[in-house]
Length: 527
Image 1 (tube, one colour):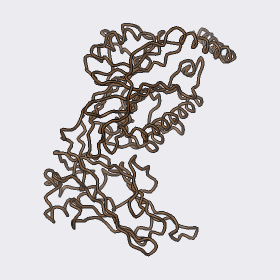
Image 2: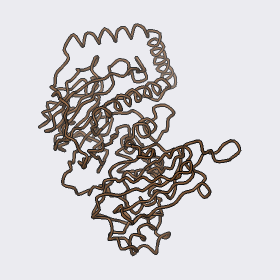
Image 3: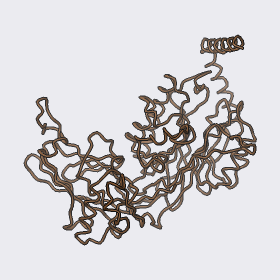
């Protein structure tokens, strides 16, 4: 299950070989001296494991003798998406790469005659030189990159000695704009995946189903036993309502906990527990919009939202960590509310990311799949495209492919709790700290009688954090979080708020009761 992360330098040589316009840019961006906007990761990974991977053995039978060594193509690809935007007036450009930055440049020339698809056209079909030109390549196409073979062989022919011992990969971009030629050179850091200056953190995301009318204290004791036995470093839970004391009372070694809001009403069911990793600046943020009072999940009756915190994972690395619980159900009102919630969270994350410059982990119960491609509640559009996150399940278990989940659709397993489930981990790093998801698994926690302890599977994820040469120590003064309960007055306020909501929705209540009664009568008649 482990995903071997490695830099595919030979395939990266295809930087100028083809592009698909309209991709979402990765999270990191910069502008070159001459004005090219570049969007790409600033860190790539190299590994001691190199494995040739082809679409089919038949297509590349002649290359099977090259499955090992410095020139073989790694089987896994990491952070290989990019976009370059050239200024208006650009009529020609080329992209070259090098391991030394000195004379060993390889790449491709691109011009308007041979590759006119990169330039916009006017109404008459002529190239519109007044518009910037975008040259890009999305990550999901990387594994079909046949050009890696070509550049691997070029390195071999030139006797460059492979790339395991190189620490940088250099880009040289040349272009002609309004008749003037420009050249920009920049480099990307290469980090060995076996770098000792790294930190592996094992996390759990779990909806523990602690609803007072559905769960039991015994179920929460079993959940606590499961968490303790597996020794997770960071645990995020949802629906931690009615049996919180049974859950935390069974945890061994989890001395750091977020403050508890209490049960229903008034509780949001969200908490974070860690072993030997202090939790700072814990902040609970309710959703600005929710849907459902007595039906459709009754999401308006609790202050569901997200909890933000800063966690010290060690070695001077601090992580912005989010745990959320989104609106349930797939009716129009719930879908709309979930869309509003995701955008609220995205805005909050983006503001913090720009200010804090820390790696980010977002987890919780999203109550929607990615493969449903809903117009609203758009996980991919909001978190992957707009925020620049990667999804741990997709990266580890679906070959980094966010579009094709066909093998799972035909597996016979429901997505719930098995694949692309509602329990997710999104993540992204910074220039100073790179993050890689190295393991992922959905686990069903069972009681002694073989029945599940929750209606959700637990999502187990392992992350590796790397320091880069741009790492900067944390300087913000952080506040330690102490586990507390908000007390009786807070609960009375929420009881009053819920009573007001029930009173203002009497018509809906009677309609729902009438529907239930009618269904009951129809059932009796059918018998």
